[in-house]
Amino acid sequence: MSDQAKTVLVVGSLNMDLVVTTPRHPEIGETISASNFNTFPGGKGANQAVAAARLGAKVRMIGKLGRDAFGDQLCESITRDGVDATFVTRDPHASTGVALITVNERGENTIVIVAGANGRVTARDVRAAEGAFEGASILLLQHELPQAAIEQAIHMGRSHGLKIVLNPAPARDLPAGLLTEVDYLIPNETELFLLSGLDSLEASINMLINVGVRNLIVTLGSEGAILATPQQQTHVPAFRIDPVDTTAAGDAFVGAFAVALSEGLDLNEAVRHGSAAGALAATRPGAQPSLPTRQELEQFLRKHAPGKGSRRR
Image (tube, rainbow, N blue to C red; front, side):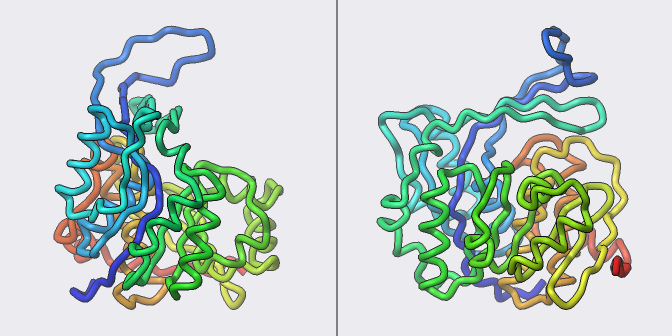
């Protein structure tokens, strides 16, 4: 990575993660014992903002917190990591968002989200934060905010000339017209199937490319990632690791990908940087505490030979 990262603007959620570690996920109606409980700063928006900041980007964030203790802690946390929280507002009528996370002994998680103040971010709020768009090069979005706020951010990102990266998580339907406004779409396999309405990986990728998605990056966990454009489709292998907690691995991927783009790396290298950051995050517990620094990522990349994508067409 170069030392010339430009500003990354994140419009997204901030949550407090309440995490329990269990030997396995409980069945419906079953009570099981957990080995420990922790609280970690989280939220896909905040995770991706912190991921980018730790890798050297200048990061601004637009979002909303409650006026409560969790809100105080989350604001302090992202600021400490170098995220500009000027445009993160406080809502006196809603609690700060919370995520209830269960992690099993294989590092796999289930997550239940209470949106709280995140669910009250409006298109008007985004318009009021127009100053955050000025001078930014990348706009980073997820799906933990209301659709109207996301659409407004995309419209403003376009008008300000930003490259738009959308991580459509959690999965939900999107109009095809909106997908064509996004420069880089980064779903996992589940989200890909929901967006396409199909249950085949290859068919889903082809469908989204055919409706006008410019650059599609499908993350596949331990199977790596697929990079698809109208011109090519390449498989980027995963880095081999022993996972501890995969909670923020996807957010680490997206944050590192955005930073790499902002520094002028080509698409294949940006995906490789994302894969490396995601692998590192999965080796540590928690969301934001697991996100790697620039030094850690560069050491990891030096240690592992560059992955060579294999053609799928």
